[in-house]
Image (cartoon, rainbow, N blue to C red; front, top):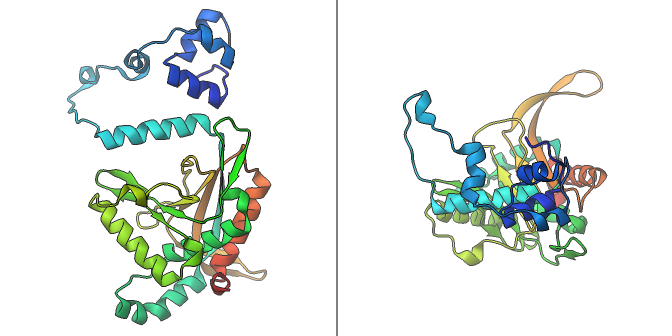
Length: 292
């Protein structure tokens, strides 16, 4: 990790200009770099900049193989790097009682089979998030590039991160706040299926209010998702577990889903995030409220 003090925006600008901040700091005899210092920096090729850390002859240590990164993966890597450098992100970890949702899904299974729709827990999360975004409009917003204004959105579109063989894709459920659970579940399945086949259209991606990324089908108890700009927050979901919860007298087994909300600290503070998640988990623990 770099010991040079520089803001995320300065690091992002240096990356864009092709300037090595560590070298510039050494040349200036400084431990910190400001935006104005970049004017005197010498741009270097990105290959040379990367070689300082990654250009290693790995074959010197044993047998290796090499495979090319796809163009899709390269673009994703650039976007993730920029997001990580420019956004001062914080992650709020929480959990939600999904006992009622699981019971509700079980009762609806015969109808789901008749409809040919798999009613997943993710559909409930999408619906609950849409309702919560309506109640917390600052989370349904985007910060201007200069950081001087906030665009509040009059729509609620939820991005669904889909793990595919060719990389992560994020198709969007449009107007999720105006749709019922059956329609949301159907759209999630359709979008995820077509994403796997690279058949999602460009207009079906982008413009999300917030993205949900779920590892529930794989595992884990917590993670730190990277905010997907120009969104100001992202919700992560991991595997549902039976967890002992104290009821005031004894520990009771409760079905809980871990949740991870990463947010842009320039727009959202910790108290805002805690209130947002309390509101969201309230909908999840009592799903009938989502319908009201």
